[in-house]
Length: 234
Image: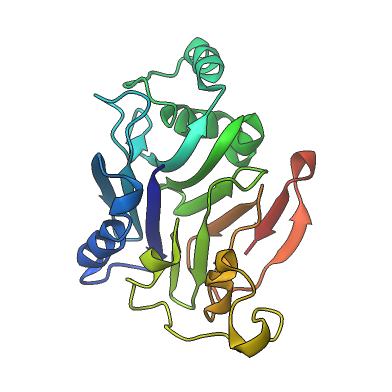
């Protein structure tokens, strides 16, 4: 079990490194072995890692050859050896034995369709720095959790709600929508706790979510991508 988190902002902002540290630290129980971070003027990625594959060199975030695409992964890619062999045959250079590294190289080949190449249980966040583009994805069975808040100036995500609440841009307010709450104003089930917090959503299983260039309020059209996996476009 690992924990991933991060946020996307419109431009440079003071204090982002401190916010990311707090968000990542809140997930320490999910990954006691290692901690990693990537931060630039628009994107912050954090990860707490439980080392399973490539204990020595598999630190995250992991990037491509020229350090323009970065990924943090919670979960496991079952067919990573097969994908790696194919990608090496196409000229990609790998620096680790980690399953997470195949995601950045497969993304270079297939773009968003990288998700259809992956067999596993996973949730990941991939940042394409030159295009200022964030891709979030979750496996089709929904085994790995992923929550997000899409505000007017910040897009925040994490494996658990507690990570999002460490970001000051995420409101600490309960939603009063009837379909989110059960009798007595309580969440219907424990797993729906995040849905009971105002403006926090849980990613649909098998879904991809893209954010590019600038943050916008949460308004998207749900349609179906390749193989019927839902795709939410800003």
